[in-house]
Length: 119
Image (spheres, rainbow, N blue to C red):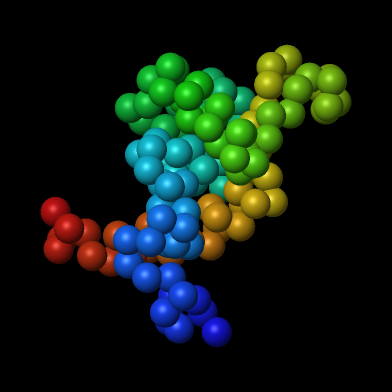
């Protein structure tokens, strides 16, 4: 049974699963970076182009956080064929993919459906 439904995870309890999940969304750009990587791996420049309004510094911080949590992986030049131009490529890990294609995609759909109410 879901711990949220059977009372094991009460409101305001420090180790609540909802709180742990919300921590992943506490930095406003992190979910955006995860969503931008959902279609596939990208170079940093392509991420900057895809995500309007994010600065290079904020992207660097976000990628660092997401990598430290195991949600994003950095593929170096030595890990891939030499055909594409040189430079690191970022991609979702399997954990990051499960977050980006599951809860984040659902949250985005919910926000789109309630856009007028949220404005």
